[in-house]
Every structure is written in structure tokens, then in C-alpha cells.
Length: 165
Image 1: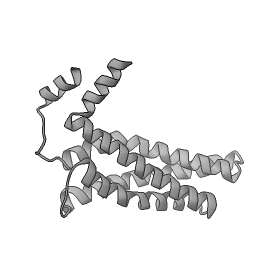
Image 2: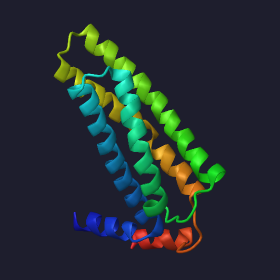
Image 3: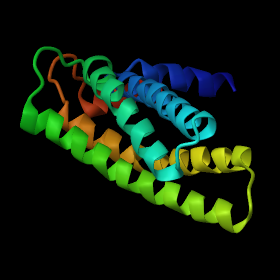
């Protein structure tokens, strides 16, 4: 177990490990925002599933962009519209499409099985969580390339050596 912890700490101390940790934390925050908004508008205000998913995910996209850009990828200043904004919103739109599909599935599933509203809320939240889970790794790989910055880079072979030690 100690060896696993040492390897995790060594991986974190690499530029890629730090970036992955920060990207993960931004995802945790934006997922919490999204699920919190969906739980409120669907569970409390009783909006329908699809508008709830759309609204919750649109709200969460704004802090996700700024947190990822500044904290995970170390960018500051004005955003580059074609290199940063458009790809981020395109990926967010893809996630939104998946989320809408998941919300529609949740609506049909909970209706077909006569779920009470609380159960339907849990299913809607789980479906949204799973939809965005499918995009998580792909988005990291895409944005790691797009928001790449040269300072603080370590050669891959040096980084691999750090992780192995």
C-alpha cells in the first residue's frame, strides 16, 4: 500500500500528474454544480427532465471553462476564441447532447416503471452523471493538447522515470 501511495505522489509531482489532478478536481466541482442545479430545478421546482438537464449543464459549463483554463492548464489573459472557446463549447455541446439523451431515457424509464418523484430525481441525476462520465477522458486528452503551455514541461522519458521511482 505504501508503494502505491509513493507512486501516486510521484505521479502527482509531474506536470501531467498535477494537470490531471486539477482537471479531476474541476470536474468534481462542475459535476457538483450541475447535479446540484438539476436536483434543485427537477427535484424541488419540478421542471421536466430534459429542461432540467439542459439548464444544470449550461450553468456548470461556465465555471468549468474558467477553472480548467486558469487552474488546470495555467492559462491567463484573454481566451483565444478559435483555439480555446470554440473547442471547449463544442465539447460541452456534445456533453449536453448526451445529457439530453440520458435525461430523455431517464424520463421514459421512470415513467415506464412508475417511479415516485424522488426515485425519478435519483435516476435523472445518475443518468446525467453517466453521460458526462463518458466524455471525461476524451475531454482531458483534447483540452490537454489545446491548452498546452510550454513552460514547466518535462520530457516524457524524465516524467516516466519520476513515476517509476
